[in-house]
Image (cartoon, rainbow, N blue to C red; front, top):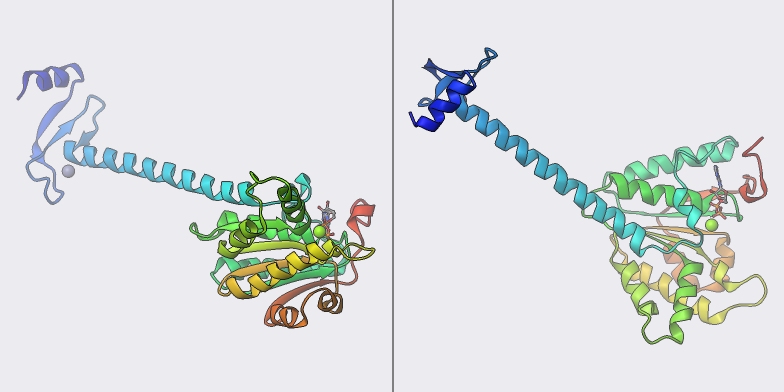
Length: 274
Ligand SMILES: Nc1ncnc2c1ncn2[C@@H]1O[C@H](COP(=O)(O)OP(=O)(O)O)[C@@H](O)[C@H]1O
Ligand SMILES: [Mg+2]
Ligand SMILES: [Zn+2]
């Protein structure tokens, strides 16, 4: 035995036993007895430690991957107001009958998305009923628990239009119409929040509506085989008045629809604190 090993064994009061390890391939390894009485095979011990290191590396890699995934949703999304990031299923209060029903329904849809099904969902209803809240909760859930290679994106139409407008006079800005169309075309899960409201309540912001129109066209085109969640305060008739009828009829076919017709406006207090 090498003197160094001998010294180490003496110091740690470790002794070799006459038996060898019974694991296949370990026949030449003599078992060791530690000072505390534990008997082990040095080869088994090394393998166990290597496995533990490998497992640790895998965990680290997974954590990094998860962080990158979260970063994509956070980095690339545009929300109209920061507090919307806090919206989740946990803080979505379901007391009213319709809210209870819709919460249950969207939970089923999330499970279907997570299991790999591809389909589009529309959330429709008056302002303040929780469409943005629910769509954010949905995309955060898919981002958290969905397949690792899937990209999620949340785009508030109003925020996107603001970015595009500010890019008109700024050649350096990357936020062009093409940038957003490409971005929204490539992600696996997209929330397009609040279409139709860009038209304004009085008169029509034609340029904005035309752009959203193009976006909707692209969604019907480039996003085939990908899932899109759209929210709007407008009715189908209103949407057909704003955009091309054919595009709307294509977008509304084979969808899951979550409708709020009997829910109070949560922005003005409603029943949340009652
Ligand atoms: N069921 C609910 N439970 C808790 N907060 C809600 C609920 N519905 C809406 N809210 C909150 O009320 C506000 C308005 O909801 P929002 O999702 O923006 O409505 P919409 O997009 O339909 O106009 C948000 O602050 C949202 O978080
Ligand atoms: Mg909204
Ligand atoms: Zn062994």
